[in-house]
Length: 515
Image 1 (cartoon, rainbow, N blue to C red):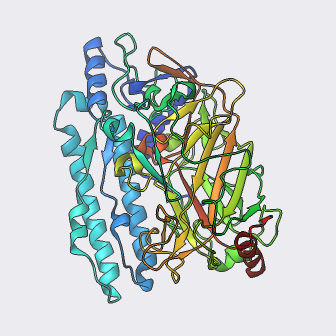
Image 2 (cartoon, helix red, strand yellow):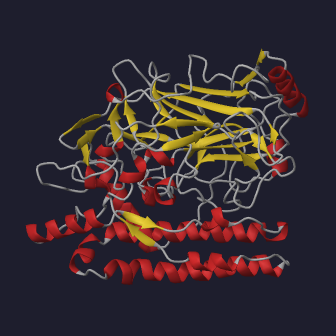
Image 3 (cartoon, rainbow, N blue to C red):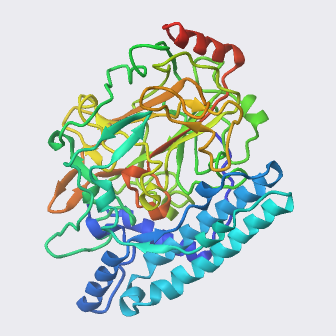
């Protein structure tokens, strides 16, 4: 199990987020306003309770420009310092969200409280941090884009903000567009007899909500990717049609941490949510490429020491897990029982236009966006469905409620075009890309094997009635992203041996199915 060394959080953030997480311990149901952590706090009159609920309805979370996504060129000697400062930006947002969640009564009593006590001070902290990024880059002779200094200011986001962009959007998934039909609605307040009691029904202090779930049997068919019992097919009927499947288990040894060595190397709790790890057993924030290359692996094929990791899925039924009192866990609103996948299928497929080339050692790929609820859907890459429905319905903005006997499925198709030289990029995205609609790679990029991850879960069936959801489930998220399904994401670091990678490429290019 990877190390997960923790730094001491500020007492304010710990207290505030712990108050939010404490809401999860009662069991029962969840209503729309339930992620507002302090609307449940003791009040002296019904009028104050109404004010707190009203304040909660007006401001759901904090939305800050993603500085990391705007970085395009960071000199090698500045990378660690910049990564540390980007992690500080995430921590600042987490702490500001915690304060937002714990001060609902003050917000109800003072219309300027959020701006003066939360958003304003946050801007000042972010400005200083962005300036340190500038110094890190210029100190080693790099060029700093001065427009990044304009990204310090944050805004507040209402509960309804995501309604327009969430329902019926398109998603990029392995170069193919999936139209999520008009049946998906992720907005509008759910009323429960006029009462909105955050936490009174026992679920997590920051989501999900009833509007985040949909009965999959009532969703219009929208899937364009044919998903069979063995996962997704290759990208078309020509080109390199072989497959390579690696079996790395379902994290039965409970290898978890809240780090992310790709985006926050050297920073404990850099993800602010818990990951499942399969494959490489030494992945934590402090692992070097040399340590990863020498690590043990959970894969049956010992030539695969690659690291595959994704946010855990939890059921919020009032139960606790080992991290209830930990940073990245219960302290930051990630509550409930962790669900181990019943299946974790890891398959590499080819390119419908032609052959693929080998991935370089230590290539890093992130797909999806852990901050998509506040960032917008540009980098979202999400597919939620149920067994028996994968050929019909793929969701991106809602969690499916599956019929009896059907299992929840998370499917991810990674970028499969590589720039031919870099194993990573400043924003961890621009060195790889999705194929174009015809299967070709743009801008001189090379086709590489496409990783497709299919995770299947036995999830207790949620029920929604009168705006209340019982037995909610959700992926872990950054606290301010409110456990929205659109934030699902997946990470991969290639540590296949040269021999095994060559075998994979040969199998794919010659149309074989190997493992």
